[in-house]
Length: 174
Image 1: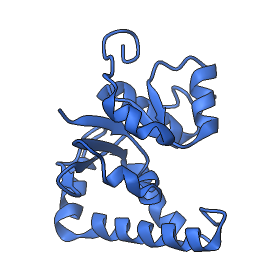
Image 2: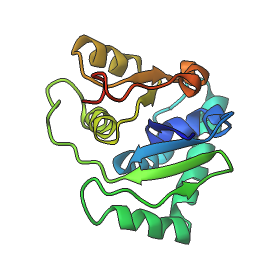
Image 3: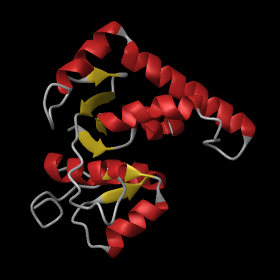
Protein backbone atom coordinates (compact mmCIF):
# COMPACT_ATOMS: atom_id res chain seq x y z
CA UNK A 1 0.00 0.00 0.00
CA UNK A 2 1.27 3.46 -0.93
CA UNK A 3 1.81 5.96 1.91
CA UNK A 4 0.84 9.53 1.07
CA UNK A 5 2.20 12.71 2.62
CA UNK A 6 1.72 16.42 2.01
CA UNK A 7 5.14 18.07 1.83
CA UNK A 8 6.92 21.17 0.57
CA UNK A 9 9.04 20.67 -2.56
CA UNK A 10 12.18 22.01 -0.84
CA UNK A 11 11.99 19.26 1.77
CA UNK A 12 12.49 16.66 -0.96
CA UNK A 13 15.57 18.52 -2.20
CA UNK A 14 16.94 18.96 1.31
CA UNK A 15 16.37 15.46 2.67
CA UNK A 16 17.61 12.89 0.18
CA UNK A 17 16.42 9.97 2.31
CA UNK A 18 12.83 10.95 1.47
CA UNK A 19 13.51 9.81 -2.10
CA UNK A 20 14.74 6.37 -0.95
CA UNK A 21 11.92 4.97 1.20
CA UNK A 22 11.56 1.28 2.01
CA UNK A 23 8.01 1.20 0.67
CA UNK A 24 6.02 3.10 -1.99
CA UNK A 25 5.37 6.74 -1.14
CA UNK A 26 3.36 9.42 -2.89
CA UNK A 27 4.22 13.01 -1.99
CA UNK A 28 1.49 15.61 -2.51
CA UNK A 29 3.17 18.95 -3.13
CA UNK A 30 1.34 22.30 -3.20
CA UNK A 31 2.26 24.07 -6.43
CA UNK A 32 3.26 27.26 -4.60
CA UNK A 33 6.10 25.31 -2.95
CA UNK A 34 7.37 24.27 -6.39
CA UNK A 35 7.50 27.95 -7.34
CA UNK A 36 9.37 28.67 -4.09
CA UNK A 37 12.24 26.52 -5.38
CA UNK A 38 13.16 29.22 -7.92
CA UNK A 39 13.43 31.88 -5.19
CA UNK A 40 15.49 29.61 -2.95
CA UNK A 41 17.90 28.56 -5.69
CA UNK A 42 18.76 32.12 -6.67
CA UNK A 43 18.60 33.69 -3.22
CA UNK A 44 21.80 34.93 -1.58
CA UNK A 45 20.23 33.81 1.73
CA UNK A 46 21.66 30.47 2.84
CA UNK A 47 19.32 27.52 3.18
CA UNK A 48 21.77 25.53 5.27
CA UNK A 49 24.20 26.93 7.87
CA UNK A 50 27.32 25.27 6.42
CA UNK A 51 28.47 26.64 3.02
CA UNK A 52 29.19 23.17 1.59
CA UNK A 53 25.76 21.90 2.69
CA UNK A 54 24.12 25.03 1.28
CA UNK A 55 25.79 24.52 -2.12
CA UNK A 56 24.71 20.87 -2.13
CA UNK A 57 21.08 21.68 -1.30
CA UNK A 58 20.97 24.44 -3.93
CA UNK A 59 22.31 21.93 -6.48
CA UNK A 60 19.53 19.52 -5.48
CA UNK A 61 16.99 22.33 -5.78
CA UNK A 62 18.32 22.98 -9.29
CA UNK A 63 17.90 19.28 -10.13
CA UNK A 64 14.34 19.36 -8.84
CA UNK A 65 13.57 22.47 -10.90
CA UNK A 66 14.96 20.75 -14.01
CA UNK A 67 12.79 17.71 -13.23
CA UNK A 68 9.65 19.86 -13.09
CA UNK A 69 10.68 21.73 -16.26
CA UNK A 70 11.15 18.57 -18.35
CA UNK A 71 8.63 18.77 -21.18
CA UNK A 72 6.58 15.74 -20.14
CA UNK A 73 6.48 16.78 -16.47
CA UNK A 74 5.74 20.43 -17.29
CA UNK A 75 2.71 19.33 -19.32
CA UNK A 76 1.49 17.27 -16.38
CA UNK A 77 1.92 20.27 -14.07
CA UNK A 78 -0.02 22.52 -16.42
CA UNK A 79 -3.00 20.16 -16.15
CA UNK A 80 -3.12 20.77 -12.40
CA UNK A 81 -3.14 24.53 -12.83
CA UNK A 82 -6.41 24.78 -14.74
CA UNK A 83 -8.58 24.67 -11.62
CA UNK A 84 -8.27 25.07 -7.85
CA UNK A 85 -7.44 21.85 -6.02
CA UNK A 86 -6.76 19.97 -9.21
CA UNK A 87 -3.93 17.44 -9.02
CA UNK A 88 -1.30 16.68 -11.62
CA UNK A 89 -1.02 13.18 -13.00
CA UNK A 90 1.62 11.20 -11.07
CA UNK A 91 5.25 12.18 -11.67
CA UNK A 92 7.37 9.09 -10.91
CA UNK A 93 10.82 9.73 -9.41
CA UNK A 94 11.83 6.10 -8.97
CA UNK A 95 10.17 2.74 -8.33
CA UNK A 96 9.08 3.79 -4.80
CA UNK A 97 8.46 7.54 -5.08
CA UNK A 98 5.80 9.44 -6.97
CA UNK A 99 5.08 13.15 -6.83
CA UNK A 100 1.65 14.69 -7.34
CA UNK A 101 1.49 18.48 -7.54
CA UNK A 102 -1.68 20.02 -6.12
CA UNK A 103 -2.99 23.41 -7.15
CA UNK A 104 -3.75 24.23 -3.52
CA UNK A 105 -5.62 27.40 -2.73
CA UNK A 106 -4.91 29.38 0.43
CA UNK A 107 -8.23 30.76 1.64
CA UNK A 108 -7.23 32.70 4.79
CA UNK A 109 -9.00 30.08 6.95
CA UNK A 110 -5.89 29.97 9.11
CA UNK A 111 -4.53 33.36 7.98
CA UNK A 112 -4.15 34.73 11.49
CA UNK A 113 -2.32 31.62 12.71
CA UNK A 114 -0.27 30.42 9.74
CA UNK A 115 1.59 31.84 6.78
CA UNK A 116 0.17 31.13 3.27
CA UNK A 117 2.41 28.09 2.62
CA UNK A 118 1.58 26.59 6.02
CA UNK A 119 -2.10 27.21 5.34
CA UNK A 120 -1.85 25.41 1.99
CA UNK A 121 -0.14 22.46 3.66
CA UNK A 122 -2.90 22.23 6.28
CA UNK A 123 -5.72 22.62 3.76
CA UNK A 124 -4.13 20.04 1.44
CA UNK A 125 -3.76 17.63 4.34
CA UNK A 126 -7.40 18.07 5.29
CA UNK A 127 -8.69 17.86 1.74
CA UNK A 128 -6.50 14.91 0.67
CA UNK A 129 -6.73 13.14 4.04
CA UNK A 130 -3.05 12.50 4.43
CA UNK A 131 -0.48 13.63 6.99
CA UNK A 132 2.02 16.45 6.62
CA UNK A 133 5.75 15.74 6.65
CA UNK A 134 7.86 18.74 7.74
CA UNK A 135 11.00 19.85 9.53
CA UNK A 136 9.55 23.22 10.58
CA UNK A 137 9.39 23.18 14.39
CA UNK A 138 7.54 26.51 14.59
CA UNK A 139 4.89 25.22 12.17
CA UNK A 140 4.53 22.02 14.20
CA UNK A 141 4.13 24.08 17.37
CA UNK A 142 1.45 26.29 15.78
CA UNK A 143 -0.53 23.25 14.64
CA UNK A 144 -0.42 21.71 18.12
CA UNK A 145 -1.07 24.94 20.05
CA UNK A 146 -4.06 25.82 17.88
CA UNK A 147 -5.50 22.28 17.79
CA UNK A 148 -5.52 22.25 13.99
CA UNK A 149 -7.01 18.85 13.09
CA UNK A 150 -4.20 17.43 10.95
CA UNK A 151 -1.68 14.71 11.53
CA UNK A 152 1.92 15.72 11.02
CA UNK A 153 5.28 14.07 11.31
CA UNK A 154 8.70 15.55 11.75
CA UNK A 155 11.06 14.48 8.98
CA UNK A 156 13.29 12.92 11.64
CA UNK A 157 10.41 10.49 12.24
CA UNK A 158 10.05 9.57 8.56
CA UNK A 159 10.73 5.86 9.04
CA UNK A 160 8.13 5.71 11.82
CA UNK A 161 5.65 7.62 9.64
CA UNK A 162 6.09 5.06 6.88
CA UNK A 163 5.15 2.21 9.18
CA UNK A 164 2.34 3.76 11.20
CA UNK A 165 -1.27 3.16 10.24
CA UNK A 166 -2.80 6.58 9.76
CA UNK A 167 -6.34 7.08 11.06
CA UNK A 168 -8.67 8.83 8.64
CA UNK A 169 -11.99 8.70 10.47
CA UNK A 170 -11.25 9.49 14.11
CA UNK A 171 -10.97 13.25 14.01
CA UNK A 172 -7.68 13.93 12.25
CA UNK A 173 -9.29 14.43 8.88
CA UNK A 174 -12.95 15.12 9.59
